[in-house]
Structures are given as structure tokens and as C-alpha cells.
Image (cartoon, rainbow, N blue to C red; front, side):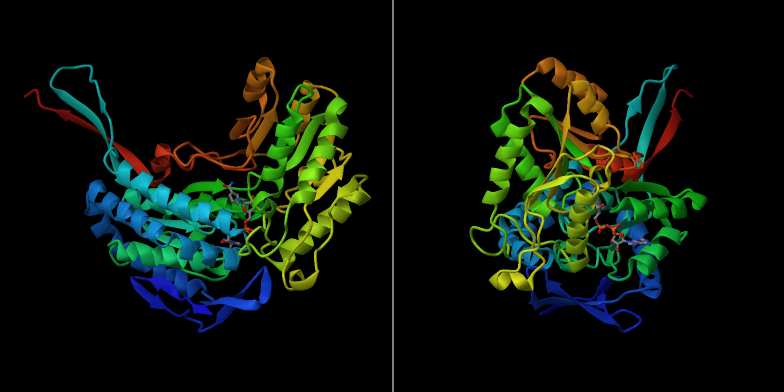
Length: 485
Ligand code: NAD
């Protein structure tokens, strides 16, 4: 079993309370993965103070100097790819192939922002008069807090941390308690890459206490959160009184619309990957399949075939294509939603049960699940499950499909499968989502493109990822300089 501590001011430290907790492998709870400090407000306060002290020195470095450290970190992550991926699988449960992809993505994110250090800057603007220089300076914000979820435990910390550090901020991150190991490994890598003490601080512990301190402490000038709608909206309100900068990226209820003219083999493949891949534990996972009635039965048959071909098991084992739920509460929540769906009139077409054969009894495994005849207003069609559960909603037309897709209060990712270019274009105009895909999976994002939701999926204040990610982590100052005299 590994043992981690909080990382504050460049030192690894126990929680002030002295308390610890242990995480177990969700694929085999007989295996203890790591022990952690149960941090609280005192630890968050110490981390904020360390970040405040480190900020001026870090901000004074050039962006190119900061970028070199990010690029070096990218190389170090890549060199340790297989070891980090295995750790990720042991703690969070996704398959080794999925974890390897996530670690590679993290290396790519650091490389991307390392490169951005050469173009980070303001803009010169033509003035009305001669001999005037009018320009903007891009400056860091100060102490920035990051609160992250467990489902992408290295990629999400990375896509917040890299632009935050590039812009010259000092960072305090609170990773989710279900999977903090890999964030601690990332901190070690950044130290090895040359990050000065106190510039990055990691506090593990209670969301309410550590997260609560980060949300309410006046020294924290900006907070970027990814997680559930409930927690995100609470933190947003805690930031508002002091007008701290806020970026809240939250859950979705992502549709894949399948039109009658679609290639149904393609549609079934896209839904199976986006609905059951990552055990359905992706914010952009497909959970609603909105399909034109004339092809609903044919699509359903193909999807069930794909679901039945999925090999559920320990993600470290060769041949396994879907891992466990991250925790017992998550598994119970998934199974509970299957019950609720049936009580509300949906038919269970495939899966729906916990798997307990042999070694599976020691993990949080369930079958990939397909529900048919789902009503658009049923809870299973409106609430995020965050598990391998897909509901099929038959509709009579493209317009009805769009209306159903837009009828929920969230809007993160949305996919459409069709060969009709006109409908595809109309869909991109009318769908209420931050990420829109045509003939592609609803999951899967290009790290160089902006990402974020609309409606209750996001405060939609600043996009994450891509070159534009620096907008959240920096401020612009406008300078007027007169050299005419
Ligand atoms: P969560 O909201 O339970 O927790 C997220 C983080 O907030 C954790 O670090 C947690 O400890 C912390 N937290 C909990 N209570 C807090 C409080 N009162 N104050 C401050 N911090 C607190 O979410 P989760 O279960 O870790 O993650 C799953 C959710 O994340 C899903 O809803 C998923 O859709 C969403 N998600 C969204 C995106 C996106 O980019 N939009 C990406 C991944 C996951």
C-alpha cells in the first residue's frame, strides 16, 4: 500500500488533525491502494498561506521560463506512463487502456501549455493619434484554487493546473478523495521539473472543510471547479459575495440523436463507446439515445448486441473492456436508477444487475444496461446517473428529437448520427450544448479546443482547455503610452 501526504509549501505533511483514510481498489476491495491525510480547514489555510508567499516570485518569472517547467513535466509524465496508468486503474477502476490514454493526454496537455508560453501575452491596438502605444498586458491573478472530481483524476487536474501555472498563479488543489494518488504523483513530477516551493499545493480531505475554506477564503481570488451541479452551484454562491472569479464545470445528460437515415451500425457503435466506455463515468457520456421510431427496434437490437459483447472486470486484466463503478455508493446509485426507470415505465432490455461471479464479487461491477421506451420526462431521462446505463427514447421526427434533447436543464455534450447534411447543420445551430458532435461519440475532446457546457452544466463564464484556457487564469491591463512629447 502506498502512503501520501498533503503537499504544502514544498513539504509533504500529515493533516493537522493527524487523521487518515484509506482507499481500496474498486475492482477488488481486498486491495488497499493508498493511505491519505484527512485534511481540514487548518490544512487548507496553511496551503493558501504557502501559495500567497510563493506567488510574487513565480509571477515575476517570464512565461517562457514557466513554460519550460511544464514542458519538462510533460516529458517526465510520458516516461512514467505505464506506472501512472496502472496506479490510476487500481484506484479509480477504468481499464488500463483508458487510463493509459488519460495519462498520455496529461503529458500532451503539459506539452501544449509549455508551447503556449511563447505566445502568451497581450495585444497592441491601433490608437487614434500618432506616437501613441496602446496595448494590453496579461497578468496573473494570484492564489487560484482548483477543486476536481474523481472520474478523470489526472487529466482534469492537469487541464486546470497547466494554464494556471503558465499564467503565473500560485495554486492550491483539492483532488477528490476517491482518487487523489495520481494528483500527488503529478505534484512530485512538477517538483522534479523545477517548480519552486509553494507554487503548487495539494490538500486532500473533506470537500466541505477543505473545499469550503478554498471557496470562502478572501485570499483565493479565483476558483475553478469540476464536479456535480449541486456542489458547483453551492461554491458559486460562496464566491459571489467577494466577486471572486468562478469557473464551474458540472454534469450533463448527454443525448445521441439517431435519425432514420443513419448508418445504424455506426450509431450503435458510437452509443456503446460513449455510453459504456469509462463505465459511463464521463461527464460527456451518452445516457439518452433519442431515435426516430422507424429505426428504433433495429438500433436497439444492434446496441444490445454491443452491450452483451462488453467484457466487465478488473481493468488491469487483458481483454476487459469495462471496469467497475468507482465506489459502493456509485454502484448502488446506478442500480437504484435502473429500478426507478422501470417503476416509471421503462423496460429493462439488457443488463441492469450487479455482477458477482467469482472475483467480481470483490468489486463494484454491474452489467452494461439498456432501457427501452423511456419517456422524455422520466427521471432516468433527466437526471445524471454517471454509470453504464443508456435509455432509449423513441420520437417521431427530427424536430421532436431536438425538442427532447433540449428539454433538460443541462447542456454539456450532444451527438447526432445522420447522413443528412441539412439536418446536421440545423442541429448544430439549434442544439443547446457546449460540445456538439456529428457522427461521432459524445465523449472524447481535443485538448486544443475550447470545452465547457451551457445551462446548468456550467457557469459558462470561461471555457476550459485550448489556448483560450488562459483567459480564466489571467487578467488584462490596458496601457496607454504617449511618446509624442
Ligand atoms: P462532486 O461534486 O461530488 O465532487 C467534486 C469535488 O468537489 C470533489 O473534490 C469534492 O471533494 C468537492 N466537494 C464536495 N463537497 C464540497 C463542498 N461542499 N465544498 C467544496 N468542495 C466540495 O463530484 P464527483 O462525484 O467527484 O464527480 C462527478 C461529477 O463531476 C459528475 O456530475 C460529472 O458530470 C462531473 N464532471 C463534469 C465534468 C465537466 O467538465 N463538465 C468533467 C468530469 C466530471
